[in-house]
Image (cartoon, rainbow, N blue to C red; front, top):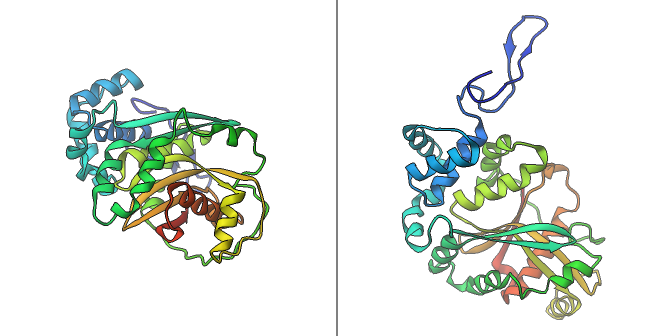
Length: 292
């Protein structure tokens, strides 16, 4: 046990060596406190405001110097730090992330990083993707939520197959997942913990849990342009885990804990790309898809 948490200790039966498998075992503070402090700061709070927020929210009093050291230590994987000063001039820390609950049979929390949305779409490499910004900003009260509440066809379980090339590689998202997932306070919190951290701290994620839908008219549209789509449905719905602006593309990311064993993810991601392209009035070639 250290000052702020209890660690389970194991002992080898042969050599009697004692050890723990807990993440951050040599840290005074647990990982979720450290990463929450980094996120609170990168939202635009000062160090002293971060200290106050963490004290109120997590009931832990952290010295300001410790918070500064955490921010410095995590800069290699929190690239938004380079944009933080400019972003803080556009929006206050409280208004930086727009959040909206979607009651689509189950509850999803759509979140949008407002500063990144403004700054990244101003980049000449991304200005041709601006229609996606318009779509993201329409998600709210006037969005067609009834489609998601009544349709039986969801992209995650839609019974079809598609043939697309798949390339395997390690990327920035996998490194972030390695850092963040051990900080989740429960297994069921892993998904939302990773979403929030990437939305606040990386330099490319502009939104999470983005609702998309594909209609039978959309399917006919793609077929008329040479796409081979061997399926039919009035509506297919889904929620994109992460949407990024990176290197001139809109990048759709889907988090799968067992990604290497996943058999259906490429179908789901293909439907996401087709649906979001239609909703944003963009060509499919403007999108890349990633599962991790």
